[in-house]
Image (cartoon, rainbow, N blue to C red):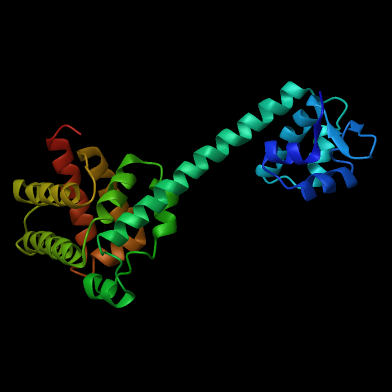
Length: 253
């Protein structure tokens, strides 16, 4: 059984002009011609057209599609396996993109699309986007990062101001302990560290004592964090790390 070009175009969702072009470049030549010279496509032609359209949808240029399909060593089953792998990967990527778009839609709906002026009003001279690429590389695959992103998408300008005020209070608590000569391993300093951990869990993501200890290490190991924390008082980053470690040990982490 064979089909005219118009019917095949309707089957495949392409134009007659596209099928004519495929014929002209030798990519899909119909197996038959009518007495009047009109193109007629059999089932094998339809199978080849399906393969062409799969590869085209995956972004392959026509010359590469022709090379793949005309490879004498190629197994039709192998074509399907390859396409299935490529399509599965593309589906996963599209799902990630859809999730990102949904997050952006939700953020806009909640009205938290801050202007640059508002960002600096809330965060002072710290730009929360400055290290976003690095953050994604280091923690983008973690549940903690995803949870932080979900929460951030819901926060308003007033929420960020509250969070920043709470962070400043945590810092003042540590500084007061340092100035009073309280050891970092003392009960009061460990309680301050626990307050810091609870602030993270309350506002950003569920921060375990083990995760908190890793953050404390980063405050000292990464000079950028050290310099920023030590603006409140020289040596504060080291003091916070020691208190965080002592508190983690107190909780068995």
